[in-house]
Image 1 (spheres, rainbow, N blue to C red):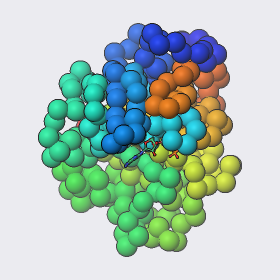
Image 2: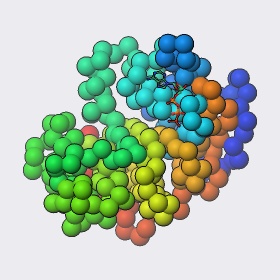
Image 3: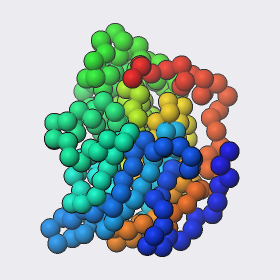
Length: 269
Ligand SMILES: Nc1ncnc2c1ncn2[C@@H]1O[C@H](COP(=O)(O)OP(=O)(O)OP(=O)(O)O)[C@@H](O)[C@H]1O
């Protein structure tokens, strides 16, 4: 087992920040990422490796480039320079349509405000991505029902987002992100709208269930306690990684029975 080390300061020649397991080939690898918005350089040369089952927190002050990094890694933005490779295949040269398909089929997303569709039930919100990637309605709804159960939401299937608490809505968002068995999950301030206890509950489920399906996770957060749930963390400033390292003693593991329920869940890739 990898022994966690204290975060270390990064030099200009530091190795890529990685979501731990130095021996594993990265699922998503980024090298030399630069992104400019006009005169503003949001990313000034960032290297990142995300490994299967690993989790990486991205921290830093407002304007340091965290969201831009997430958007470039996820293929929402095309970098001005640098390379992003998923499973060894470069993605930044794909067409807009191909990147859109990639995001739908191989990535999951969790945002600060779950962005659930208000007119759909919790079950329909979770089933929708599975249907969009080719599952029948019956298959998708069965997978959605299992995910909702695994995340402690049995009984909420028919409720609309407006009838859920903030924590329940974010857990539905986690289920929706994972129902397609993505390879990488991107979360931007996933607990930003929640109180601390509820936020920890959501982070625990997000980290453990992402790990259980073998996906890589990247979490943008302002909150060091949220980052502490991840295996590793990078700190950004002015578009650069200024510190990178493993997070000591991260996570406390799932509650009894929870991981089994999660493992038994989800539609095949
Ligand atoms: N669409 C855009 N157009 C122009 N400049 C942008 C755009 N998006 C971000 N920027 C600029 O790029 C830099 C990095 O922004 P980014 O949103 O990535 O930072 P952040 O660390 O995520 O900030 P926050 O914590 O406030 O969300 C900032 O200077 C920001 O003003």
